[in-house]
Structures are given as C-alpha cells and as structure tokens.
Amino acid sequence: MKDYTAADFVGRERYDRFKETSLHKKAGELVGLSANKTVIGYFIDSQVGLGFLTSTITRGLSLAVHFATSSKYTEYREGIYKEGNITPERHRFWKEGAEYLGHSTFQTGAYMLQLTLAMALDPGVDFEFATVSEGALTFIQHSLWVAPAARWSMNLFRRFFEIATPEQMALEDRIQEE
Image (cartoon, rainbow, N blue to C red; front, top):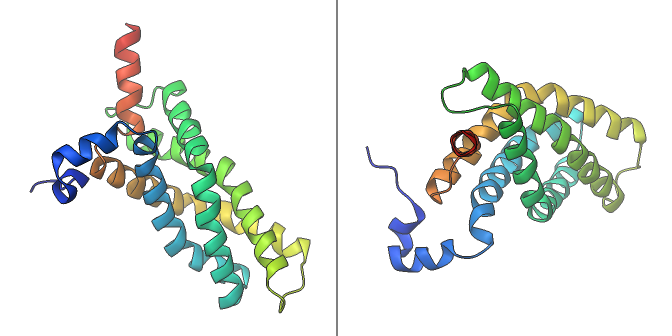
C-alpha cells in the first residue's frame, strides 16, 4: 500500500517549494500533535471535571499554544531521541520511554497553562489551583497512553510531509559521527 504524502495532493513542484520554507519541518509535529491534543484533550478535560465550554476554550488555547511551542517541542523531542540514541532498531520500550519523557515534561506545563487560562476566561468557572494541580496529575497519568498516541500521530504526519522521524534523525546523526 502506498503512503500518501502532501506532494500527492498539491503536486511535487509546489510541494518542493514548500519544503524550502522554515514551516516545513515543523508541519508534521504541529499537525500531528494538534490533532492528537484536540481529540484526546477533550477526554482528559472530562477526567478533570471541566464542562464543555471550559474544555472547548482549553482546546482552542491548546491549538494556539501548540502553534507557538511546536518548534521548541520538536527540538526538545529530537534532542531526547538523539541523546538517548533512540534509533529505528531500538526496542519499542525505549522509543515509548523517550516519548513519555518528552511528553510528560514539556507538555504538562503547556496543559497547565491552557487549563489556567481557560478557567480564567470562562465566566462560569471559579479558578481553583487544586483543579490545575489535579489536571497536571491527570495529564501525567494519562501520558502513559497519550504519549504513544502522540508519537504515532506526529510520526504519521512527518511521513505525510516527508520529514524524517526522530528515530531516523538520531540514526543519521549517529552515522555522521562514526
């Protein structure tokens, strides 16, 4: 079965021009993580006890935060894979562990920011630090399955945008160093 790429939809010549832009490398992570965080985010928000309006505000803020932080998260994630020598031939345990480390450390703070802002923007909700703390704990607990889902969606969209996955980049770096 053929893997479809963005070039299949917009044409090779036009896509090759896009590949020369700074947005290209970030596109896979941005789209993959945004899709993941929007769908799974509603579930996590419900576990914290947020209502639909507050959760919708949180998801909107999530998209804004991910747009602003996607490039930093991409660098952070790739750095974990490189430093940990997490290459395609490594066992899945190490790949998922690297993803959990990156996700639970970087994304927990982003979730806390989104939750705090959403509670401040929703006039029907009183801000409570305990809710933000509970949200962070719930986020970390769910990261055990959310991080692999995020890895899958980000790598799927990296392939769609013809961008090497962090494992492939770590392998390329290791080969260049030898």
